[in-house]
Amino acid sequence: MANPIGNPLGAAVSGGTLDTMGTGSRIVLPFVADGAISAKDAVAFTDTDTDTLPPVHAADTDTDNPAAVFGVALNTAAIGDIVMVVVLGPAIVNTTGAPAIGEVASPGTTAGVVSSGAADANTIVGDVLGKFMGDEIGTSDTAIVWVGGI
Image (cartoon, rainbow, N blue to C red; front, top):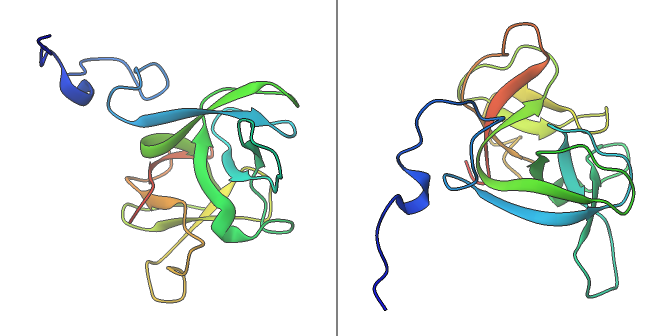
């Protein structure tokens, strides 16, 4: 059976925003919310001993191992709801401070919110969500981050 090339990985996305674009140009996976999650929250794995969809929650360095932070929620979810999470590619994330392009996005002390910092040896130790692709979007306390890998 022939496999038409069409638009591989969503390469020809035109118009729209990161909030409205399809998932073709980034990897988005479903998880189960283990607490209240807002759209644009950084999320972390919740410790589990089951073989169901992995539970996740809004990331918070006060309670999380920072290395467990892995993606950005695309939708708001309550406990038990499915939350779609960007695990690789661009996403708009809740942030504090004034991020700048190239800085790393690390989990903060407020659940779901990341902070920014220079990409030095002290910050690249498994506690990085990704890299900021630009400055804060207006005064929205959000910014575009490249999730997964720096």
